Length: 360
Image 1 (cartoon, rainbow, N blue to C red):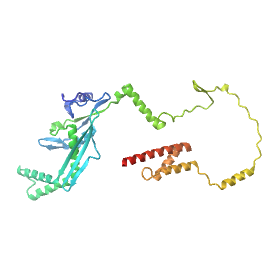
Image 2 (cartoon, helix red, strand yellow; image 1 turned 135 degrees about the horizontal axis):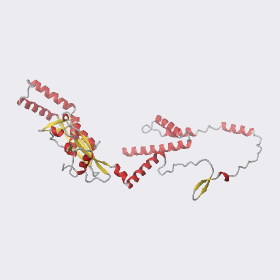
Image 3 (spheres, one colour; image 1 turned 90 degrees about the vertical axis):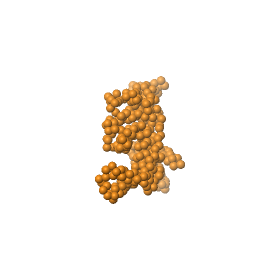
Image 4 (tube, helix red, strand yellow; image 1 turned 90 degrees about the horizontal axis):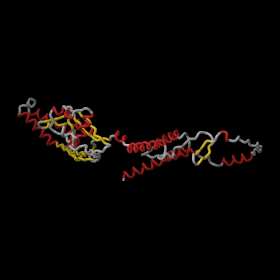
């Protein structure tokens, strides 16, 4: 009880769990002392099946399944570029694992381990084990030398088939044991108690209780809403006034005009329309025949959309689908459709620039 930090002990007691009935994994005695007031310690409980452990010396050691569960609980991540097989031959494989774990104070800890599978050494180890069984009388299966050779070849074949996987798993398990300070000499009684894995998480309730943090969260929420439904500063929001006439007032803005103040409309005098001149109509029709038909605005915008297509970000058929979607969303309004296509053009431009910079 004394070696369990107060923050972890408090979380266990808050969940009505007796610390004496759990194996608490604590990397250090001062764990959790550096967390801020907007963070708290959370715990994950991992139960271990003794079948997932193996003998080492006079005790038991945790195997792949329980250690992988603990790593997932605490949030250990593996560097994708530096973790992998670093050397390989017919009878050997060596793997390197680079693990990253965040400490309670926000600092990231990087741990590197390697594991080598040597099949020649593994064959010698298998033979020595079988010889030891024979010396101590456990050789009922090894009545003949041929039986022992068959057993050696059978066990070695499994290691040869999965030598890369065994090396990679061994390197990762070494990282997990070191980062979580997991022991290597457990008894069956120890493994009957679940393991408690602590981790530091954001205390959202404490953040919302603080007036400043609550306002920051609301501002972030408003920004997300504006990005979805309007400009970042609300510039795109249009205020729709009811139908009617308005008078502009510097102090109060637009004020509706009372109905009684509106003068009755004045009827315009009737003007006799001039007789139509059909010769002008014929001249206009003859002029239009020689000129090519003007392209409709929708066709122009469609051509602009299809010009944005390429083989990587937006294939030709995808551009056609996007144009139809934007056309429907804009209510077949040419001005709104053109604005939507321009935004898409800017997005694809920035996306291509980012891909180019990443390639460099």
